[in-house]
Image (tube, rainbow, N blue to C red; front, top):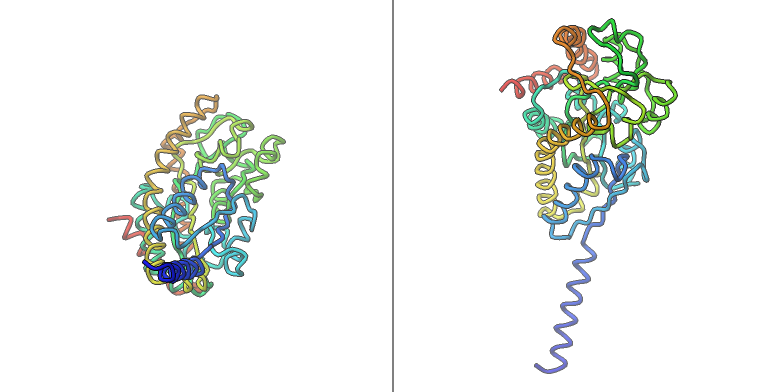
Amino acid sequence: MKPIQFKRLAAVALSASVAWAAQAADLRFTSYLPETHFGTKLIVQPLIKKIDEYTQGSVKVTNFPGGQLANAPGTLNAIKSGIANMGLVGIGYSGGAMPMSTIIELPGAFDDLVKAQAAYADLVFNTLTDKEFLPNGVRPIMVSILPQQQLVLRKDQKIDSLADLKGLKIRVPHPTAAQAVTRLGMTPVQIPQTELYLALERGTVDGAINLTASVASYKLQEVSKAVTTNMSLGSIAFIAMINEKDWQKLSPAEQEAVAKAGREAGAASAQVFLKVTAGSEAKLNQVGMRLFEASASLQKEAASALAPMQDEWVAANAAKNSMAGQVAKQLNEALAK
């Protein structure tokens, strides 16, 4: 091959490489979860890894954990405004922007996490994307719901009925949990998760509605003595979203790959969370926390007190959105299959 031909081929190859690099998407992902949090390791990182794999590196996602770009309530706005291109939104922190999507967070909404994950993903992707997400300028990429939250208590106290819980000041993660706590006779306190350790240490709160797996992430075992294992005090839905303008900049092949990554990462998360919860309970037991099952009578009392919440959710949302009843029916029917 003549030198001039080789130079021309090299120039063409270099030009193609530069063009590909120019087209590669570099997306900033915002998350309020700390880098060491199980949610970062089990939700965010697997998603990013799959996106890189399925797009063959043409979509690069960089995570900014621990609220570097936005705190929990500000995550959705950070994605909408372009501060971040993508992010993990705790749907209860969306400030009412996506009310239909909060239904899965209701206490007692489900018993089987794997079945609930599939039912909720179907609801979000096939019903709510056009109704709630796109009007907000974002598109859901991955759906992940957490196991039912439990009651973490500062003191190891006797709990046989709701009367034993009356008046306790309990930190809640979102307004839905606040309603549940109130119905159970306790007093909800809304403070950031990052302030919970100090609040428990000082006795500002008597406990918290918390996911068992995140107790150790925030070192709450150092300032609390007991945690329930079988209460149904509500879930938390995490939805990874992308700014719709950034989504439209991706090629059709990249969109398909990112969507595939999101669906797979979300579906896999349910089984992972079940294993993580079991492991977390064992570790908490080892460090001296008392893990206890709520008695049948307490569960019955709690279920009776919380039962009206879905009907109230429908009534409250139907005033602004006529599809509230349809959403509840669709989810319930999917869970009953």
